[in-house]
Amino acid sequence: MDGDFVPGAGISAIESRGLTRSFEGKGARVDALGPVDLRIAPGEFVSIVGPSGCGKSTFLYILGGFLQASAGSLLCNGRPITGPGVDRGIVFQEYALFPWLSVADNIAYGLRMKGTPEKELRERVAAAIAMIGLGGFETRFPRELSGGMKQRVALARTFVYEPDILLLDEPFGALDSQTRELMQDELLKLWRASGKTVLMVTHDVAEAVYLSNRVCVMSARPGRVVESFDVALDHAPGREAVMLSDDYRALHDQVWLAVRRQAGAAR
Ligand SMILES: Nc1ncnc2c1ncn2[C@@H]1O[C@H](COP(=O)(O)OP(=O)(O)OP(=O)(O)O)[C@@H](O)[C@H]1O
Ligand SMILES: [Mg+2]
Image 1 (cartoon, rainbow, N blue to C red):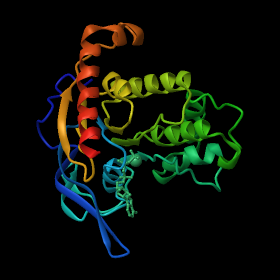
Image 2 (cartoon, rainbow, N blue to C red; image 1 turned 60 degrees about the vertical axis):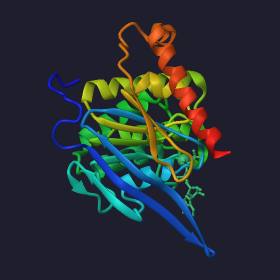
Image 3 (tube, rainbow, N blue to C red; image 1 turned 90 degrees about the vertical axis):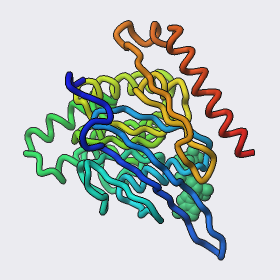
Image 4 (spheres, helix red, strand yellow; image 1 turned 180 degrees about the vertical axis):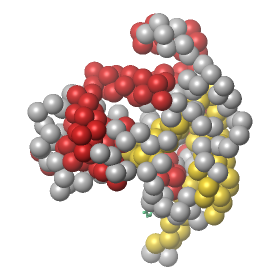
């Protein structure tokens, strides 16, 4: 990562203050989220874990510019979010591929929006398809793919155009464990090489602790950030050594207990 990276210094990549969202319907109001107070510095990799239905996806949709907040303020690189933008790449929990586009065209979408020259675009798409192990499937359509394959295309579609901020909603949930580990390591590589800001929602405490440099635990709905754990693992010794280390185990257990406390409070 960048040598002079100082978490918390300068303009935040994401700054959420008192952010809330409620949904109205059939006379009843659901308070889905917040108030969320969260600052993420450029280059941080933050994971959010918390009980099902606490508002994690809602928070990511608002950050992505697909949904408006009910109250509070939300800045992205110092500017209010007014809609979707190529500075933020989102991988939705439900993949949300374009059904009318082939695998290659789905992946090329963001690059086309950015006006990438055709030759460079083709090279980058080919590299992305190789990364997700879907060579030979370039001309297939989403309906012809399994859930895990669709999830890999969704990841490649976002990684390939290198947005400043990656918003990932349970990005590895549909993958078999071997592919999941491969894709996690790809994400780690990308993050370390690029210094991108990553905000990832996951149910997998092991994944959150292994990948991120901060894990935020949300309360039950309406979700607030109630606990935050800094992670400073050295990944150099490799996955197995990291996951068997005392530092990793201790953090994993602390986060796991924090999530359990919130899930328990919800019942
Ligand atoms: N469009 C909507 N209309 C009405 N209610 C909604 C809408 N979207 C979300 N909700 C409600 O908001 C709450 C939070 O939903 P959200 O999908 O953000 O949770 P989540 O933390 O992502 O859950 P999970 O871990 O299961 O994915 C839930 O109670 C859900 O029913
Ligand atoms: Mg969700």
